[in-house]
Image (cartoon, rainbow, N blue to C red):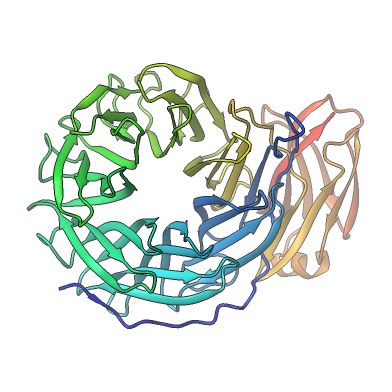
Length: 507
């Protein structure tokens, strides 16, 4: 039986400094266009971005999860940056056990609602809700769940100040995992709860409002599909009663991660499918009419080889009729063996691409999980990267133009974290005409803790070391006057331990 767990009121006025790790190239396509950039944020633990919102001043709020900054368990972290990606503040939410955020939405009063799940003392999980003001100050926290696992995945604001959340429950329904939809008032009181599923595992990943006040839900089903997991779309009315349900897929696993209502009364979902000639998961987009029948044949990528290709989020532009998706892929023709962020746009009538797929990332795995269209008509993507610092995942934020044009990576700020203490590492100027300075804040402190000789290494695009020098002080001069113009990788090593790695541009 699902009940509302005890409300927990937390003062979250504390501030932990968030070190901004990389990256900034700024360009403007016109006097009204916002800056385009790629930036990452995080530390030596696991840091991942889930959802991005734009603020009234053109900046961004990032809902992220972090195990960095001296935390014993994963906590939810809200990061506020300006329109250039410069860090302004960060707030943390959670308790002594793990807390994971899935989605964030702005409410009618300008505040914020975050949903996710919270670990309990008996190693189960409760669906959790965090309500904050516009500046991220925590107003209240509530947990909802039973004796098993309950997860919050996506939250959507309602016009009455309340909100709805979808996810998965093991505490209600058939018991092996059902999709759950919950309606709340502005204070977080439960108005009603509905579950959907059968005897096999089922779950919901996303929800969107429909024009008639009802909802469309997307996720996966093993109970009602063609075999294994199938992508699943459910249409429900304003009270959560099922109107129709459709599954899409073949004999292997298929998933839906994002869903949206379109102005023609239909709906579109995105995800991944095992259908396709190469195996693995392939990009998947399905568009249906108001009655759930296919509007056009499902769009399946078939050109990226055996690697997994996943669309994770989808948005709709009502004025242009365009659907835009984001996700990740390791396409050997584009990004080699490593995953990169992908964004793609098409008209909701199907089949006609408004721009070719754009790819962002480095020599490592980079994934996009959240997508918005920005006020200048461009796009912002948030996700994770391990391709630029050659370490555990960091949060990655990408701002591009309406045509998906972005900017190359370069590096200007990083940090080393040793025993919970942060020290900035700055290589400047970057780009360089040939002479730069490597500034290592707190060098004597962290170098002695890590042990071993500290060296700076420079590699070309082929991975060949072209320069190495011993570092013995806080500020060291680096000369690349004899190096050809291009993009290089630098690494600071302490013995065999890599402290940081980044990109250096020789112009």
